[in-house]
Image (cartoon, rainbow, N blue to C red; front, side):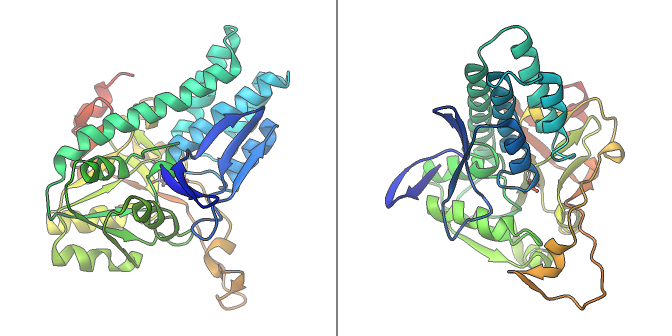
Length: 332
Ligand code: MRU
């Protein structure tokens, strides 16, 4: 992705390896500051996944791959490291896929840095293909809607839901994007709006609760990412995705999910089996460091919800656009 770093506009990834360190953009600091942090220990990478320094399913996967790389370089027990990293967050399948992918390569003696670098590069390559397939859906003057951040920050580079937008914009198409703010962590407002702004893509931030209203005014299609997709096409994504899919069905608006094959967990028969991460209630009732909820009121904070397959028009993958009933027969 293009971003201004130390006053210079350049290409930057969400996570990479450099001089013995796993480097990543601290996504908690955007959009006010583009802060880069570096780690030399896999346990710190696991903590960075847990506390959302790095986030978004494919970026979590690549960070986990680099975490396994550090564990190998430091001579740490790989089985233990794999368990520690996998315990960081439960929902994004890419985390588990990446750790297992790395374990296979490290056990067969492959170079840790080269392996993790190729995992990250494969992720980027898949996203570019998602962009090529998905851009065919975008026409001039369309109004799109997205939720959370499924952009370059969430995928090392390029994005999943934002990949078709980037490709269409590069091809000269003119369109507009509604970005829902994504309470409580505000990934839509703070990250997606920042990325679209860096690219010069026309967009407006809307409150999460305004999605159905804007759909009633005319939206051509909705596109989100996913954290885990079950064999029957049910999928987990950021809390609030399910509401949008229901509203889209009401208005007859197509609903697309963009994700690489590493997000598909074909061992899960349906979305009922997906573990939904519950995060701290402070993310809901504390805003900008101030508690705004009444003392004594408790909050609930599920990080994801599960949208049933029958609300999905298609899955945009690196292999092309699949109908929900095609997911179960797909192979890596
Ligand atoms: O809690 P987050 O910010 O990691 O959640 C991210 C999402 O829900 C994204 O939509 C999903 O990971 C897809 S990222 C390409």
